[in-house]
Figure 1 (cartoon, rainbow, N blue to C red):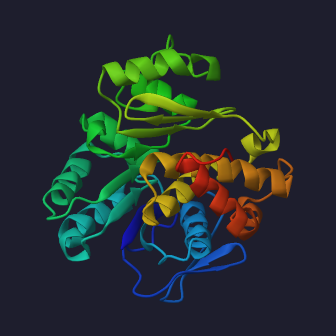
Figure 2: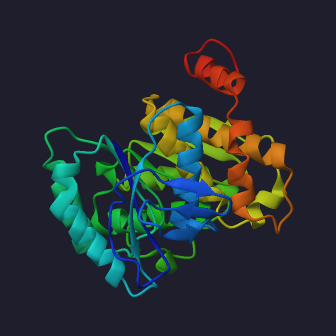
Length: 300
């Protein structure tokens, strides 16, 4: 079982692992207990992407652990506590952590609980939980981060406790990715893999840039909230399908760009409209080409 943990901006949303299948109904993510949340960006967009991709890959959908948090951290801390108490019973094969209030103490408690499991799950992190992992000094305990260039600059600043405090000389621009990555690696603020999202996506595996993906390029995607969450959701699905993680990262970045080319979005296109068309992007021929490329047989 793969689990996705994150938050939604609703203080009344208690932390719970829905017992039953999730469903995507247009622009809303429907939970088994009858609740639903809009797919606009953030964790719901990640989950909706993973649902669509897992269906195309013919594997079990991930379970979703959600809590309501409007920014004060209370819901996130309830979710952290819930995870500490229940992760042993869940025994997940993988965990994707997303928008959670960055609390280093609770992050460390969750990480200790996960590391105590008999079988270590793969650990993916983006957004707030990625910040907490770096703040705590345990970024290297993870298997994948999916930062944009601004977040990479934060990872590169060994002194910054939060992206807001990244020092100004660490410029968050695409042409600065190589020196930023060098600092990230030098200071140990790096998991085994990175998808650095930007005008060109950089796939980093075991400290080496394995691929730089810059086409097709659809500039409108930069204006649409939630497109980075699509990449993380795709990486989650490919990892859950047991693809080697480096191949899963490259497949996620390439599929997100293929989706953009298929949809030809405008800056005001809702991210849910893109996610609904993922089955087209994840056609059997495309998946076959990705798999062949990952095995070194043919380019995508």
